[in-house]
Image (tube, rainbow, N blue to C red):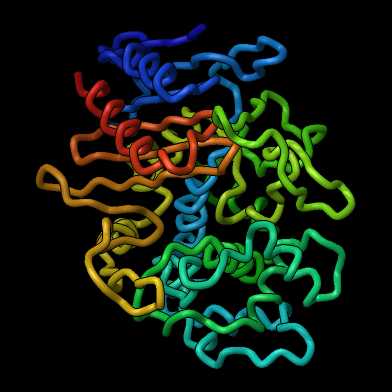
Length: 393
């Protein structure tokens, strides 16, 4: 089942239909959306498979999908809007702005917290390394956080910041990079403090609506709270049908609807969107389509600011990283220019990818499942290379 549209006057399909069908069959993807723009103009939109398998409801162009960590570039652009407005700088000390989120009673905060800057958070250089310790955004650490704070689980995004203010860092801020969901949680709280709005309200007012996006919103945990037009999510074949709930007293739940506390993922993984929305966002950042969200100098900083080296498991910097420059995006040198992209994944829920290329393409894909975690290292490169090649055919 598919609904694909090549926009009038455009030569766009480029084999994308065939590529999507092959990827769906190979990776057992129930539903997929793909959108492609060239030089800021949407030229292809495709909706494939089922939004609701049990209800035999097809994916359509307005179906909303969880986008997981493709949220991070959205949060980064919101922060950079505040920089352009003179309300923040990249050197601003992050935790100096968060006195309303004190550490737990009797905690002894790591003094290095005071050195963390906005730039460190954007570059995953704040000092947290989940490979060396843990990711506080997910079960079971959310239960630990609730216990330390003496509050009912699951803790909110703000509660998790309070908890982590009492925990030691894994490395010196700014000395290395290690992918950090929590660092983007902190950026969400910075946005709230500086703007005096909720994270969602600021992003919608300052990033999404100026980009012509009206349907994006933050996702919710409960199936009863599923947004209008939002798809259902499915675990990969062979995955457990139920997992421990993030909510006390619930025992085991369907993974996508309770094993992850979506509300606490807001600024690092919480948005739901269409593929077309994501293309609209990426083409608005630098004014490839319509008024630019960011000034040229800030776009340059977004793509060219050098990054520290990646952290080893113990926290020391070592080796090369996929992206050696940039703020909020994975940046790569390509064909005499730069590409910028980001992937997203929530186990038993979704996969997403958004990218811009030097030759003027903007491409987005969203799905309502994620292949087995052991296959992720194969899945994302295959997905992106296959679709990018088809987009150019």
